[in-house]
Length: 413
Image (cartoon, rainbow, N blue to C red; front, top):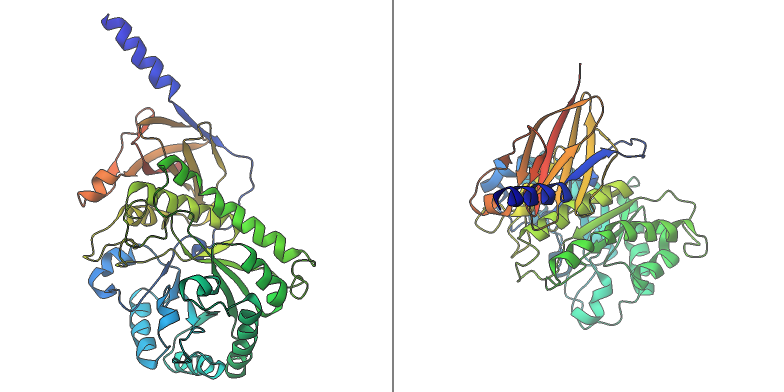
């Protein structure tokens, strides 16, 4: 009976074994702004969490972040706070959102106001890579009871603000439309004013946090498909008659598994963190810059909670700060384990995302490379405020359930 039990366990282990081998794709440079970008808001106490935040190696910040830009003016005081936090975080690339929405005309959202923001930012020494015109205009009709915000009106606003901004800074670049999830609104904006956009932006929130874990995780595929859809729309003269000859630059300026700020499920848990990592790596593969929502302290959004404690997504983005250099193509023989790798010199870093709710043994067969270390981000360790756990690398590496593991290899002498 005892021998039969041992045999059963061995067969189960073999059935669940995962093998990673080299993939067929050619290497390509990894742009840090496609991996380590976040939304920053002036409500975030950046200075109180500097060691944790600096460890993320942030390459892109989008400000003022979300609906705040729809409801508040760009003021010199606000830009000064941005300057402080931007400097503390190492002066990464900046996307600054202009205001376009007002209620009863109250607020600074005119082309002249956008131009003044450019002057104020310049005076403060801020280096703005893109000025993003508005935030989620496709939701103004439903969320703000203003159905006047058609793609036609949005494009007229883009053209007016663009002209005013370029009059102040001829080298400025314009982004938009920052829609909430790609769809007909984005399609129509590209058709009407693709020529006025130097960076096409959208947001991705595939669920409200209520989906089953497997379905929620599977929605990471939308990162790939949304970028493919934008690329196809941009290149086609029929869908982008005015701008199809311009080079396409893309950015996802907000994303998260769930849009429900007041609900922690699939935002602050392991499922949300794994989805964020996989979506980020997929956007990176598509060549899209990214700004995860959010850097910290925004209800259940944020890598750190409002008290400054890390969430699972912090652990994953902390590990993704090692996704640098150029891609190293890998493939997994188990669809439950998603793999990506990067190479810098003699070192290859493999990320293995175990989406199963069970431990899976992984063997990486990468010729010419020796495994020298492995650490895993788990919900248990994050909740206990512990760092990633070191894993035994003698034999198959046991990937914990719902975890992200970073395995480091070095070229053999």
